[in-house]
View: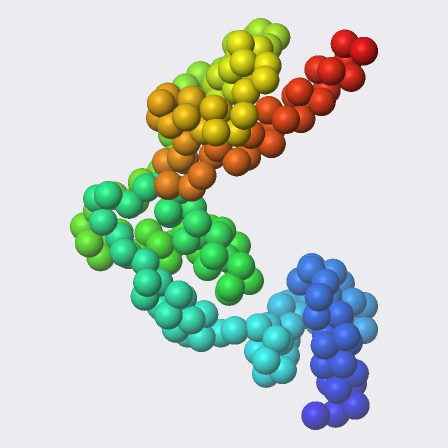
Length: 189
């Protein structure tokens, strides 16, 4: 490599944590031709071990997908968790990560579950709590001295103690309930 080329390599390595567009601006400013800058950037990052090739990324994604089973029972939460994990592990966009997960469903001839979106524009919002927040706040209003055990029994009875993926909701909402108690007593004082 000539000295100019080594200076470009050094510049790229020094700025490896910056956005690609920022690095491209720096190396173009150092005399690299505009139409060659992207190729040089990618090749230097790959040669220096700072970026995976598509083949390397595909191989790593295959390892990450080994424990994931695509089935008709797979929930949108499970899909979202897998996409997020792949995105974090591979340092790639969620779109790329989602493509790896979608491929698992395609291989099984299944449609990948998608989160449902609210239909149409949102109407005007009314004041007050709704959903779980409304249920928890109404429980507090009706049971000012309730214990965590009372609250747990109430949530289990309503079928609200776990999320769709099976995670505990009682502890989180109990903390909210306690915060509401503190706020209410301070507000009324």
